[in-house]
Image 1: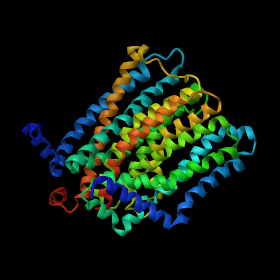
Image 2: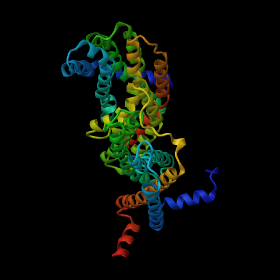
Image 3: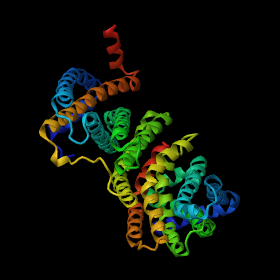
Image 4: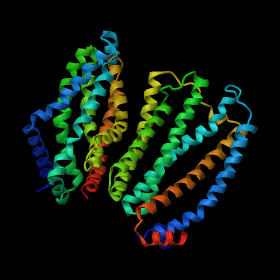
Length: 253
Length: 224
């Protein structure tokens, strides 16, 4: 314990208490929401109006502004969940459990969006809705990992042990993701030639890249808003008998 | 009692339990044969098609058979309380769990290994690929038990854990499936397979070292 400075550990202890977190989330959400909307506005305007059409893919490349940030988020959230899982297992922090389980549906949704937009993009580009491309396949597997977490949490009735189970599963999953990713990539390159439609990332013009990064940041803030809302709800559900929840409901009536 | 003898005692006990219920032991094996039999019926009996599909068919069937057998790994121990005894023992739970996994592999993985060449023969797999198929099964079936154990440990307390178990475990089996069936495929076309076998060996070593931990942690969670 001595390695962690006292101020940091105090901050953790305070944030980890449910009523304090609840109030903190309430204060943060409007700000995150505003930043999200601003970034989204800039990103969409830049991406859909300002950026020039791609010389090869025409207008249909613009789906990248949803597709790529969603795909980034799908991985980002999973890694975040694994970190939460580790915190929950090591320090038995209830809040980490709540954040972990609140993140799962959001991550699954982003994965689903990435898959659907990828498929919509694939139709005009590759002439087919689905190819067994390495990235598509590993994204699909990621969706299964998310669904596994969600259904395991749903199946175990005692929510404390459910959260422990899910933490273990998230950690196992995060060790496996690179292995799955590289094996799928390896499998794919052996079965077919180099895949079509991959964009040369390095040669992306700033007028296209900047909106993409704005969208990526917007998605991060969106995640922040939604995960805090979901966590608030989860906290209320879990601690519905606690005094602070009763105080809260009485004051709001 | 030393750790080694505790490990061996667990293995001996599980083997004894399995041999007292021989009929149950044979079920995954019948399932394996049955699933392989379904493929020619479904896709047609053209020898060429079956020959190209053989590595994949055998490996997918092995995966499903292993999945079917997993459920029993901790179930009876969980129900009769021996799992709690293991938790209370002064030995490391992950080593005891490794003993159970080893016994599970001996009971379910080894029979699969023994019957798979016969099925490969039915599907017309080239003779040159037989030894590779056998090697991939030797390296791969322990991994099925090791990785599967995590899933079982997480779901053992559930009344209807079967469906969830497959959802948890099958995605984790994918790398194994890719490398193993690919190795057999390459061997069938006369290509070298050292790289694939090395990767399988690496994955197996990793699995032996890493999987008992989450399994033990999950068992502790399930018993609570």
